[in-house]
Length: 323
Image 1: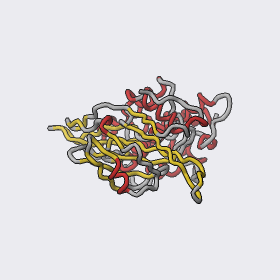
Image 2: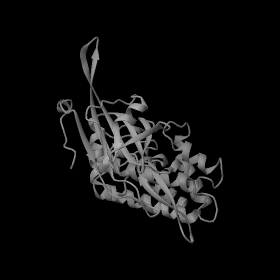
Image 3: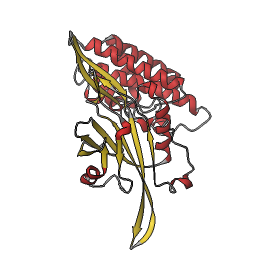
Image 4: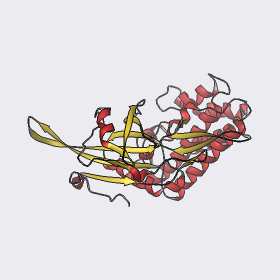
């Protein structure tokens, strides 16, 4: 059931709603996640700082308590891992709620065919008190997602090891299909970076390890920030008559830079990896030298995938900045 859009002044009237998308996820032949089985006590009020034991006593999977543990926090929220007896493992992201996040999740619910991570989100309303008097309302968002093996900031397919050409092609194919699917459905993802793509690793007989990739930063859909901006103001500003086209170009550019980082990492430690990961960051002192860095990558021909991504990124740069 879609999450009904609401005016800001109407949000505080809801005690709790759920936004969910449920599908069977298969990795290595094992069905792992039925999101409809996630439930919690209706009177449980939680915030991003709620003690972890309270979550374990109040959230359930198929009637069994979910045992939680802390994971390394994300940039925009607290992250937990949870597992129930005889059930799958989840990742849970806790954030302060706002309508912008809700609307990104509405889009994500409609875009599951684009290979987004499966999720179920709970929105919670907490009445705040001060000296025994009502002092306001706090809204919190808890998003349950299928548990993955990691994100692509931990991967690098640049070296000449035996299976890396296969992995590079698989990653690039995923990225190209994802961007095409988002674009066909009128969506953008300006802040693409390796940490926003998750993966599962599995084995098949007679074949090297396989990677299954998925987009994990759901509230980044249609958001207007960028870690690797095409032009400096695209880091957080797209206002103007060309906003839609600007966000489309920024999405394409960020996807190409992300492909560069993953497809070059490990090829020559401290050289092309550093040039991509740090020099293309919008607060880097070397941000203005991106064109020469792309020329260098194209000239060196480290691998086919990196060369193609650098060529496309350079074309966008020439159109928006150098032209």
